[in-house]
Image 1: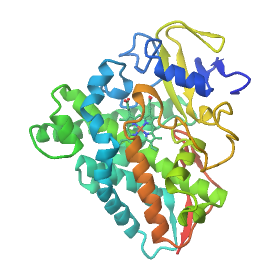
Image 2: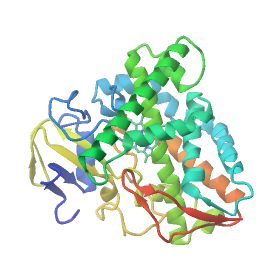
Image 3: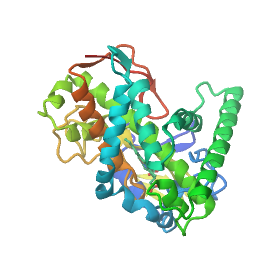
Image 4: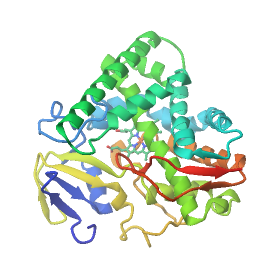
Length: 370
Ligand code: HEM
């Protein structure tokens, strides 16, 4: 697909698919020709694509210069220096989650580690009791649910559950933002609550965005890491340090990118790889395909943690480059380190894998440990 039809119009979905690294890169950086705004309401062009935060304007669906206002107040707190300060807290969360596995010889890596770990980290950064994490997971699931059979009843039910989750999140974070305004806590809710440049709705939208953007993505990175290392027979090579953890994680991000695609809408007529895209057209940017583009990566179908440079775009590109990229990398590094220290043997069972399609990962990954 990438070599034969790098840019193609899918008649059924009525949108363009873009596969090559160079083209994806160009679209993500060209804000004059492509907008990140998505819903019918906030876009003058009709679109099937959805706005996952579902209700408020946030940075992820804003274009410059509006985007700068919505991201600027928090950018510093996600830079490597600030992220290093959170590391002891992330290590403590890792140990707590691992403690729940004491005495187990088998466990489901997805349910018992990869889901609770990032939810607890976000709960910590928002300064919310960890008990709320089941609720967070339920909200996230409702908001990213996609129809499987596409029947009218199924779609109605998904919409109802999404609306209910949106309402509950709005109420929950609305209350916390109001309570913490003027406070001096170092958590992200207080930071948003005190940001003069944001409206009340935008503050609430930011909290919800953190919750949605930072959880399932990280769950899938962790799952895809254990899956890929087992598949390649490299778990012990990482354990001994022969392959660096950080390099291995970068290659997992490229090889099994948790976010496989992004959407943009054309706001100008533009030619891309010989195809004429018109204002109003929806484009799907296939990050997973771009991350295996042979023009950029040698032997792209091979898992090679030693590759340097590894210019993958698993965290996107341009102004919307993932705010949480340094946090996600640190979480994955800390998690791998503590998992490999805690268990002398960590064998994932790769028979009967059940993939997720909303984001790239697995529904479960049984592991044996001792
Ligand atoms: C944006 C991937 C973890 C917060 C993005 C984008 C991608 C991405 C591809 C670009 C979206 C676009 O251009 O439309 C990932 C992956 C992660 C991860 C693969 C884990 C492995 C996190 C974490 C957080 C986070 C841990 C926060 C706690 C955000 C935010 C944005 C974003 C706020 C919007 C940035 C903007 O629009 O300026 N992420 N993400 N992400 N991510 Fe992540």
